[in-house]
Length: 506
Image (cartoon, rainbow, N blue to C red; front, side, top):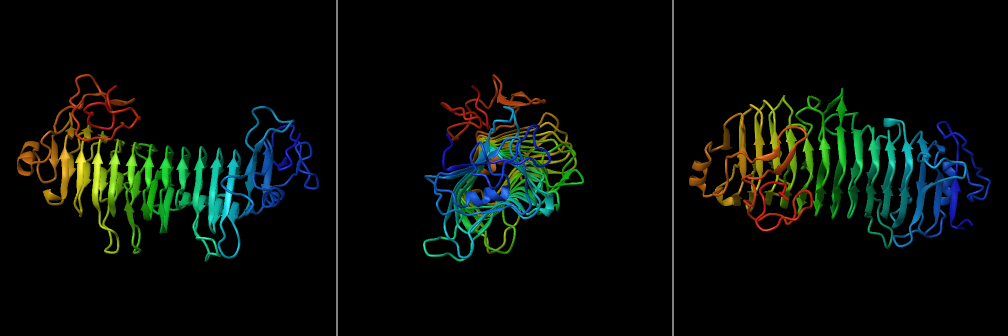
């Protein structure tokens, strides 16, 4: 028996599965007599009762000439309105996701008109939406106080913007004119000409998605993920995503894959993999860059960059600035690009303006950094301004013939609370401990820092592909760290005295 609050839609445009049976917009929208068009689905969604559903047939194909504007004040976080897939009686058990082709505008334009009024409480599941690249504006667009939305299991392909979190008009009574808690997870965002994801909001999340070949229309300014806000965002998270082929211009990565500009509090970037191909990047193809961009005041408070894997990007793998009480820990960096000098972790990664917040209390700990390149390598750069900085329990291994500087510091020794329990080694060339002191022992004597640090082979399990950076038996990393996070990058508990680097030996 059909649920009276669930309405079905099925169309059989070009690309539909064999045997597809189209519905009729003059039908009743039941499972046996579904509606037909994407436009009708949007109309029905906007009048659903709280908890109602619009479902598209798997194996179906839908034309959406102008997308669909969605706003339904009946829906809420506790009783969400749903737009999802369903298996029609004619469809095979492995029928593909409902395919929605958008020829102009936005596939899902989620906003109410006029002054901002709180709406939301939506769940979008298991649909494939595609556009015409730069000629179609966005897969999802959020504006005017949208709250509590989840997108899951989507394929978003060939728009100008995959997902955009925008702003709001002036608030109506009862509205704070702020988008909040919009989450996209377990989805694929590909081939979007400008940005895969653009914007930010309080509690917004980007989790366990695949981003590939986004930003190809313009170098430097386009990205797979572009976190951007000048109204502030609190508690945003980017977790468990795979980012590949950022801003490919003539087949070469030409901009940072994961960028953040504006001002953020409690932003967490954790467990992401960012990768490019050897020989297919410019030096501006950075991995993570959370930094300033214009003359508007920008800052990052309590930023966490943790457990990420950055592989073969441009000359900075992880970078931030204008950052207070920030933590960079348990990350793995692999750098094999041959054509330019590299800094694996950099704070600051660029110069800030006088209007931006000064950095202070930046902690860089328990990272494993590997380079195999004929060009020069700097492991960690930390300083620029402020006090309370710390660089401890990091391991840097350079297998290439290029010069190696383990650390770059440009502040007085008193600006650093801890620099110790680090290991830096190259089997191919002599390492320079810092830019100001080539010899570790001389550095120890002149500063009192790094008393327990070593220039020695860390004895990883494997330093050839496939890599294994877990300390091997007898490694000097084992039980040699100072204060460390409770878990390593894999989530394994660090028991007793922790191991140096991102990995704890079992």
